[in-house]
Length: 265
Image (cartoon, rainbow, N blue to C red):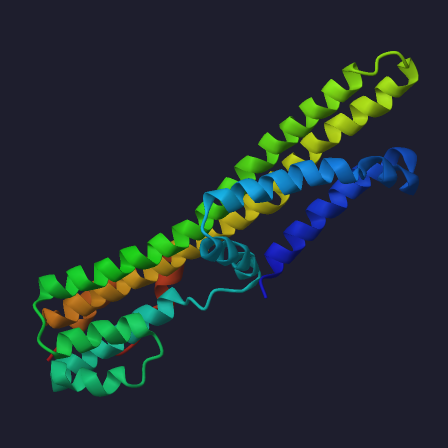
Protein backbone atom coordinates (compact mmCIF):
# COMPACT_ATOMS: atom_id res chain seq x y z
CA UNK A 1 0.00 0.00 0.00
CA UNK A 2 1.18 3.51 -0.82
CA UNK A 3 1.38 5.09 2.63
CA UNK A 4 1.97 8.57 1.20
CA UNK A 5 -1.42 8.58 -0.54
CA UNK A 6 -3.25 7.38 2.56
CA UNK A 7 -1.52 9.83 4.88
CA UNK A 8 -1.96 12.72 2.48
CA UNK A 9 -5.72 12.29 2.15
CA UNK A 10 -6.24 11.61 5.86
CA UNK A 11 -4.13 14.56 6.98
CA UNK A 12 -5.96 16.91 4.59
CA UNK A 13 -9.24 15.86 6.18
CA UNK A 14 -7.83 16.31 9.69
CA UNK A 15 -6.57 19.81 8.86
CA UNK A 16 -10.00 20.87 7.59
CA UNK A 17 -11.73 19.37 10.63
CA UNK A 18 -9.25 21.13 12.93
CA UNK A 19 -10.04 24.43 11.28
CA UNK A 20 -13.77 23.82 11.76
CA UNK A 21 -13.69 22.84 15.44
CA UNK A 22 -10.85 25.10 16.62
CA UNK A 23 -13.11 28.10 16.94
CA UNK A 24 -16.46 26.78 18.13
CA UNK A 25 -15.81 23.20 19.20
CA UNK A 26 -17.24 19.92 17.96
CA UNK A 27 -20.71 21.42 17.66
CA UNK A 28 -19.47 23.59 14.79
CA UNK A 29 -19.31 20.54 12.53
CA UNK A 30 -23.09 20.69 12.15
CA UNK A 31 -22.74 24.14 10.60
CA UNK A 32 -20.82 22.63 7.71
CA UNK A 33 -23.29 19.89 6.85
CA UNK A 34 -26.15 20.74 4.51
CA UNK A 35 -27.81 17.92 2.52
CA UNK A 36 -29.13 20.22 -0.21
CA UNK A 37 -25.68 21.74 -0.78
CA UNK A 38 -24.09 18.29 -0.88
CA UNK A 39 -26.64 17.09 -3.40
CA UNK A 40 -26.19 20.11 -5.70
CA UNK A 41 -22.39 20.00 -5.64
CA UNK A 42 -21.62 16.28 -5.63
CA UNK A 43 -24.72 15.26 -7.57
CA UNK A 44 -24.25 17.93 -10.22
CA UNK A 45 -20.56 17.11 -10.62
CA UNK A 46 -21.22 13.38 -10.85
CA UNK A 47 -24.07 13.65 -13.34
CA UNK A 48 -22.10 16.05 -15.56
CA UNK A 49 -19.21 13.61 -15.65
CA UNK A 50 -21.68 10.82 -16.39
CA UNK A 51 -22.92 12.80 -19.37
CA UNK A 52 -19.33 13.27 -20.56
CA UNK A 53 -18.31 9.58 -20.57
CA UNK A 54 -19.70 6.22 -21.55
CA UNK A 55 -20.81 4.02 -18.67
CA UNK A 56 -17.81 1.75 -19.20
CA UNK A 57 -15.36 4.65 -19.03
CA UNK A 58 -17.23 6.12 -16.06
CA UNK A 59 -16.87 2.92 -14.05
CA UNK A 60 -13.24 2.53 -15.13
CA UNK A 61 -12.56 6.09 -13.97
CA UNK A 62 -13.99 5.52 -10.50
CA UNK A 63 -12.17 2.18 -10.20
CA UNK A 64 -8.88 3.92 -10.90
CA UNK A 65 -9.22 5.68 -7.52
CA UNK A 66 -7.93 2.51 -5.87
CA UNK A 67 -4.75 2.62 -7.96
CA UNK A 68 -3.34 5.52 -5.94
CA UNK A 69 -3.11 3.26 -2.88
CA UNK A 70 -1.10 0.58 -4.69
CA UNK A 71 2.66 0.82 -4.98
CA UNK A 72 3.46 0.32 -8.70
CA UNK A 73 5.48 -2.82 -9.36
CA UNK A 74 8.04 -0.83 -11.31
CA UNK A 75 11.75 -1.26 -10.63
CA UNK A 76 13.59 0.60 -13.36
CA UNK A 77 17.14 -0.36 -12.30
CA UNK A 78 16.08 -4.00 -12.05
CA UNK A 79 14.55 -3.86 -15.53
CA UNK A 80 17.80 -2.45 -16.93
CA UNK A 81 19.67 -5.29 -15.25
CA UNK A 82 17.29 -7.79 -16.85
CA UNK A 83 17.81 -6.29 -20.32
CA UNK A 84 21.58 -6.43 -19.86
CA UNK A 85 21.32 -10.09 -18.85
CA UNK A 86 19.35 -10.76 -22.02
CA UNK A 87 21.98 -8.95 -24.08
CA UNK A 88 24.69 -11.16 -22.62
CA UNK A 89 22.67 -14.27 -23.46
CA UNK A 90 22.10 -13.06 -27.03
CA UNK A 91 25.77 -12.16 -27.51
CA UNK A 92 26.97 -15.56 -26.28
CA UNK A 93 24.34 -17.86 -27.74
CA UNK A 94 22.63 -15.86 -30.48
CA UNK A 95 19.24 -14.15 -30.75
CA UNK A 96 17.34 -17.45 -31.01
CA UNK A 97 18.41 -18.30 -27.46
CA UNK A 98 16.24 -15.41 -26.22
CA UNK A 99 13.08 -17.41 -26.96
CA UNK A 100 13.81 -19.70 -24.04
CA UNK A 101 14.66 -16.74 -21.81
CA UNK A 102 11.36 -15.06 -22.76
CA UNK A 103 9.39 -17.96 -21.30
CA UNK A 104 10.60 -17.00 -17.80
CA UNK A 105 9.61 -13.33 -18.09
CA UNK A 106 6.56 -11.92 -16.31
CA UNK A 107 6.33 -8.71 -18.34
CA UNK A 108 4.17 -9.29 -21.43
CA UNK A 109 5.48 -6.15 -23.15
CA UNK A 110 9.10 -7.28 -22.88
CA UNK A 111 8.20 -10.84 -23.85
CA UNK A 112 6.39 -9.61 -26.96
CA UNK A 113 9.42 -7.59 -28.03
CA UNK A 114 11.77 -10.53 -27.56
CA UNK A 115 9.57 -12.83 -29.62
CA UNK A 116 9.45 -10.25 -32.42
CA UNK A 117 13.25 -10.14 -32.43
CA UNK A 118 13.54 -13.94 -32.38
CA UNK A 119 11.18 -14.13 -35.36
CA UNK A 120 13.59 -11.94 -37.34
CA UNK A 121 11.26 -8.95 -37.60
CA UNK A 122 12.80 -5.85 -39.16
CA UNK A 123 14.08 -3.44 -36.44
CA UNK A 124 12.00 -0.55 -37.72
CA UNK A 125 8.90 -2.73 -37.65
CA UNK A 126 9.74 -3.91 -34.13
CA UNK A 127 9.99 -0.29 -33.01
CA UNK A 128 6.73 0.61 -34.75
CA UNK A 129 4.83 -2.29 -33.17
CA UNK A 130 6.21 -1.65 -29.69
CA UNK A 131 5.66 2.10 -29.84
CA UNK A 132 2.10 1.62 -31.10
CA UNK A 133 1.35 -0.53 -28.07
CA UNK A 134 3.08 2.02 -25.86
CA UNK A 135 0.87 4.79 -27.26
CA UNK A 136 -2.18 2.62 -26.59
CA UNK A 137 -1.14 2.03 -22.98
CA UNK A 138 -0.48 5.71 -22.43
CA UNK A 139 -3.83 6.58 -24.01
CA UNK A 140 -5.68 4.36 -21.53
CA UNK A 141 -3.79 5.91 -18.65
CA UNK A 142 -4.49 9.44 -19.87
CA UNK A 143 -8.21 8.63 -20.14
CA UNK A 144 -8.29 7.84 -16.42
CA UNK A 145 -6.32 10.97 -15.59
CA UNK A 146 -8.70 12.99 -17.77
CA UNK A 147 -11.66 11.55 -15.87
CA UNK A 148 -10.38 12.94 -12.57
CA UNK A 149 -9.39 16.24 -14.18
CA UNK A 150 -12.94 16.57 -15.52
CA UNK A 151 -14.50 15.72 -12.16
CA UNK A 152 -12.14 18.17 -10.47
CA UNK A 153 -13.20 20.92 -12.85
CA UNK A 154 -16.90 20.20 -12.28
CA UNK A 155 -16.64 20.41 -8.47
CA UNK A 156 -15.92 24.14 -8.12
CA UNK A 157 -18.23 24.94 -11.04
CA UNK A 158 -21.20 23.21 -9.41
CA UNK A 159 -20.17 24.67 -6.07
CA UNK A 160 -20.56 28.12 -7.59
CA UNK A 161 -23.92 27.14 -9.09
CA UNK A 162 -25.08 26.03 -5.65
CA UNK A 163 -23.86 29.29 -4.14
CA UNK A 164 -25.81 31.30 -6.72
CA UNK A 165 -28.94 29.25 -6.01
CA UNK A 166 -28.48 29.90 -2.29
CA UNK A 167 -27.97 33.63 -2.83
CA UNK A 168 -31.10 33.90 -4.96
CA UNK A 169 -33.12 32.14 -2.27
CA UNK A 170 -31.61 34.43 0.37
CA UNK A 171 -32.40 37.59 -1.59
CA UNK A 172 -35.98 36.43 -2.01
CA UNK A 173 -36.35 36.46 1.78
CA UNK A 174 -34.73 39.72 2.90
CA UNK A 175 -37.63 40.60 5.19
CA UNK A 176 -36.04 38.70 8.08
CA UNK A 177 -32.57 40.17 8.77
CA UNK A 178 -31.76 37.43 11.28
CA UNK A 179 -32.02 34.78 8.54
CA UNK A 180 -29.59 36.48 6.17
CA UNK A 181 -26.42 35.27 7.94
CA UNK A 182 -27.40 31.58 8.12
CA UNK A 183 -28.69 31.67 4.55
CA UNK A 184 -25.43 33.19 3.30
CA UNK A 185 -23.43 30.54 5.20
CA UNK A 186 -25.51 27.77 3.65
CA UNK A 187 -25.02 29.26 0.18
CA UNK A 188 -21.25 29.32 0.63
CA UNK A 189 -21.14 25.66 1.69
CA UNK A 190 -21.53 24.51 -1.89
CA UNK A 191 -18.36 26.41 -2.83
CA UNK A 192 -16.57 24.71 0.04
CA UNK A 193 -17.78 21.26 -1.05
CA UNK A 194 -16.75 21.90 -4.64
CA UNK A 195 -13.29 23.10 -3.64
CA UNK A 196 -12.78 20.09 -1.38
CA UNK A 197 -13.86 17.70 -4.12
CA UNK A 198 -11.40 19.26 -6.57
CA UNK A 199 -8.41 19.82 -4.29
CA UNK A 200 -8.78 17.09 -1.69
CA UNK A 201 -9.77 14.21 -3.97
CA UNK A 202 -9.50 14.86 -7.70
CA UNK A 203 -6.21 16.77 -7.94
CA UNK A 204 -4.18 14.29 -5.83
CA UNK A 205 -5.67 11.29 -7.66
CA UNK A 206 -4.91 12.78 -11.08
CA UNK A 207 -1.38 13.72 -10.02
CA UNK A 208 -0.62 10.25 -8.66
CA UNK A 209 -1.98 8.57 -11.79
CA UNK A 210 0.17 10.86 -13.95
CA UNK A 211 3.23 9.99 -11.88
CA UNK A 212 2.55 6.25 -12.17
CA UNK A 213 1.97 6.60 -15.91
CA UNK A 214 5.25 8.43 -16.39
CA UNK A 215 7.18 5.76 -14.50
CA UNK A 216 5.60 2.91 -16.46
CA UNK A 217 6.10 4.59 -19.83
CA UNK A 218 9.77 5.23 -19.07
CA UNK A 219 10.33 1.56 -18.18
CA UNK A 220 8.73 0.47 -21.44
CA UNK A 221 10.82 2.97 -23.41
CA UNK A 222 13.88 1.41 -21.77
CA UNK A 223 12.67 -2.01 -22.89
CA UNK A 224 12.27 -0.82 -26.49
CA UNK A 225 15.73 0.77 -26.62
CA UNK A 226 17.32 -2.24 -24.97
CA UNK A 227 15.68 -4.77 -27.28
CA UNK A 228 16.58 -2.84 -30.42
CA UNK A 229 20.16 -2.55 -29.19
CA UNK A 230 20.26 -6.30 -28.59
CA UNK A 231 18.89 -6.91 -32.09
CA UNK A 232 21.55 -4.62 -33.52
CA UNK A 233 24.25 -6.70 -31.81
CA UNK A 234 25.58 -3.89 -29.64
CA UNK A 235 28.02 -4.68 -26.85
CA UNK A 236 26.30 -5.33 -23.50
CA UNK A 237 28.47 -2.69 -21.84
CA UNK A 238 27.35 -0.11 -24.41
CA UNK A 239 23.70 -1.11 -23.87
CA UNK A 240 24.17 -0.75 -20.14
CA UNK A 241 25.53 2.77 -20.42
CA UNK A 242 22.82 3.73 -22.90
CA UNK A 243 19.99 2.51 -20.65
CA UNK A 244 21.49 4.01 -17.51
CA UNK A 245 21.08 7.43 -19.10
CA UNK A 246 17.35 7.07 -18.38
CA UNK A 247 18.09 7.02 -14.64
CA UNK A 248 18.96 9.74 -12.18
CA UNK A 249 22.68 9.69 -11.23
CA UNK A 250 21.83 8.42 -7.74
CA UNK A 251 20.11 5.34 -9.21
CA UNK A 252 22.69 4.33 -11.81
CA UNK A 253 24.72 2.18 -9.44
CA UNK A 254 21.61 0.06 -8.80
CA UNK A 255 21.38 -1.03 -12.43
CA UNK A 256 23.60 -3.34 -14.43
CA UNK A 257 26.07 -5.61 -12.73
CA UNK A 258 29.53 -7.03 -12.82
CA UNK A 259 28.66 -9.06 -15.91
CA UNK A 260 27.60 -6.04 -17.97
CA UNK A 261 30.57 -6.41 -20.31
CA UNK A 262 31.14 -10.08 -19.76
CA UNK A 263 30.67 -10.94 -23.39
CA UNK A 264 33.10 -8.36 -24.79
CA UNK A 265 35.33 -10.99 -26.22
